[in-house]
Each structure stands twice: as structure tokens, then as C-alpha cells.
Image (cartoon, rainbow, N blue to C red):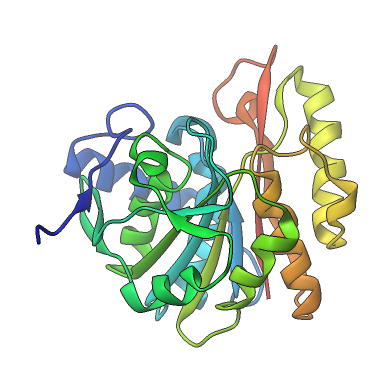
Length: 263
């Protein structure tokens, strides 16, 4: 049977398509990230827009990961599906996920563990165009080398159904749980800052009920992570909270970005 590799869908749009330029851009973002005193994270919450917009915020989380947990060899990632509607959570049905920097192997054993949960299935179509997890891969390659990955997209599913899948891996030796989500969308700059600050405060309180669909585009994954963190006695730390008006200039309508660590 032919080995299936999920090719990059947004190289050249969300991040550079040329390997040297991509490598240089990710390295520059990591080098510019404000150092954090947060402890080694069991889980990270990171944004997923184009690198000029959310890259500086995401880099604060990945810089912490590189400094405190360079030995992570498996990443279990959860992101929203922007293009394909489906029920439950979807695996990509691939043996590897590719970026311009190379391939990251899929952890087949960990996928099998995830697939034992009742709402998990496989949908290559859901993953084909999706950027929410793809944009994380070059950061993982830059900070961890070639960790094995489990990529799960959230469709029509409740946080209470996603949290047990996260808990399957949360706190496991050598494993990082990664949740991908942007925050508020298309508000004026000052309104976005207020909205995102309230969202950040709810995340720090591990209070999923305080969030709604205006809080985050990856709401289900965020709420599931807060449930799992609460049950696992983890604490959240805010590493960075900005928006596209801070990173890319235009403040008339912005998208909010936050980076959070859970330990």
C-alpha cells in the first residue's frame, strides 16, 4: 500500500514556501520572543494565522518549549476545522505531515489510542486545506526536530467529548498537548483588547463556561483544554496577548492572538 503524506496546503500563503526563507523566518521569530519564566509546559495554546500576524505570539510559546522541554518527541495537536463540516474529531489518514522543511511522522500507536475514543474518526478531506495545525509544524520542526505527531481537527463536537482525548496524553512522558486557536475576530483595536483580556482571564481561571464563539475560533479545543487542565490540577500562564494591530499594523479590524502554557 502506498505511504500517504499530507502535503502542505498553505506554504507560500501563511508562511514562506522556500525552505531557507521559512527556516530563517521561524528562527527570527523565536529569537525575538520575549523570555518567559513559566515552568515546562504539559500543554500549549497557540494562535494559527499567517506568520506576519500571529507568528510573534506563537513564537513565545515555542521558545518556552525549546528552552524547557527540548526532549519532547510526541505532539498531540487539536485545531478547528475552518473548511469542512463533520461530526466529532478527525485524524488525517496519513503516515506523515509535510512542510517545506521536511516530513513529521505520524505516531500510529498514539493515533490508535485516540481512535478508541467514540467521536474520533479519519477524514483526509477535513485536513486537506486546513491551516490551523499546519502552521504549527515548522515551529515544531525548528524547536523539536522531528517529533511524532497526532493531528486532530475538531468538527461538531462538545468540549466534554474532546477533553478525554486530551487527557489520554496530557502529562505523559515526552508528550506535549498542543491546542490551536485565535481569539477575537474583526473588532476595532481597543474593543479587541478588552475582549481578549476577558478571554485570557477566563483561560487563567480555567473557566470554560466564561467563553463563547466570539472568544475564540477554536473554542471547542480551548474549552476542552481548560476542562482537562482543571481535572489534571494544571495551572495556566499567559505568555503573550496581542492582536494583528500590534503585529501587522492595521487597527481598524483586528484578530486577537494569545499564547498560554499549562503546567
